Length: 308
Image (cartoon, one colour):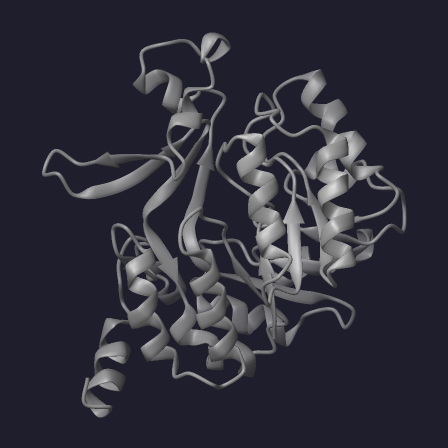
């Protein structure tokens, strides 16, 4: 299996982003997704900046994919998506059906996780439109993946999100601006104050969601690293990690060791927990509430067997 680094979901300053990807170029990641997928107002990096990063990463041996916005609200947003789709150099991850429609006929593309690819017939339709890879929607269960893999088009790669806070929903309203009691049009880019999003807790002070501009994420970190052997058996081609500012070098190293069978999955998850600020979750994989942790029994049994 190859490792991919999904698109950056947070709003970091320009130099931080450039330094971050220069570091990623030296790490054992096979595929890197670049571009703004959350909010069109976030323009610290322009189109040429992203393309320069793409060239640098490609020179470092990475496959580069340009990701599109997940929520299109205005003509200017549509124009941005069109420019990405017609870049002429790099494959595109389509996160909205408009991006698929803007692809030149016959141009290979990636079906992003926010396209509702919930069954094999939709997968076949995407393949007919030119898709050569699909990212499993985050809310699907392992049983869904197993069924879809059995009927997957021959020329279609499968990618599964295995580590990071889940990007759950998008809204025309900016949640972060709302939290600051200001309007979206006059947001002042307040989301830049939160390098990993703004944590939202319940009245009982339990971590619930993370506010990230117009995007809502899970508070807990989705982790399927313990499931990598099963994903390999199911024929998954690519496993996706979501970028975070702190600890990414170790996260990538641990996942790389697991995929190459140099580290037991359960032991890797124990080490990964230090990079999960509010703990892990995996409920969607088991067809249950996404915020639940249902693989705990598996991990506890493995650790007990090893005397840990």
